Image (cartoon, rainbow, N blue to C red; front, side):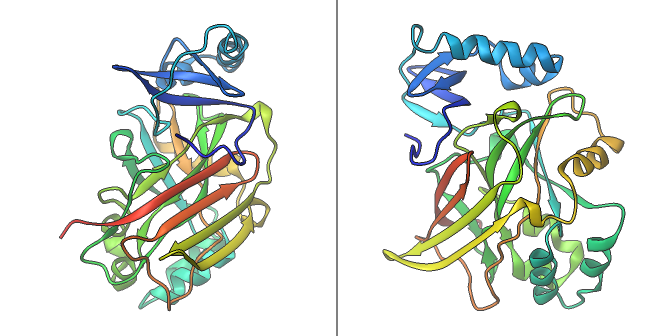
Length: 289
């Protein structure tokens, strides 16, 4: 199932158990039913949501269920959003790909951040499932990112590793092509689990490794303390113009950007590790035509 190398002691996991798909709290190696969905949990007042998670976690040893698969940690109808140019390296990388890089310079220092829609929950792929590169793109890159899980009031409920896979060639051709560069089949991976915010404290160290044919072809590291914006600021801007009664997940930008001489290829394996949150690993496939 999921990678156990760096996983936390307690987390929320969406799983398949027999014919059922349900939310659980994993405590150690045991999974106990949460009793409600993530959407319902994020609609609760913060302290009630925490008590619900802790109550289920306390029952894990005695009420553990069989887990056949760990699924993407998001409800099908929930939305995933993303922020861009929150790290200096991201700004430089997008200037490198663009025919006109000045908008990236301006948004990096602007009061208003870049925020864009990324995926619906049903389009998110889980740990171990293939992440996509567009068949009509010549330059594709994974983007390892901290995902923050926001409740219905815009407060940070938890964190999850994410991959905001992107076509750099399509975005670089014209900024108006950003939706096509960011939103396509299998362009968003999350997982394996959500770690409640009260159990971990930012900043987080992030590492990414890409393996091709059994050999490492790229390695990079960063930390969320290199972000030019705060997590609370990103959440505030998103909720200024939108409401999320079921909560939402926001990918917070990447500080690891492979150079212009690198593009993903089908068969590659991308591993994203965020200290304290877990490891997200996905093979790469070509999608579209």
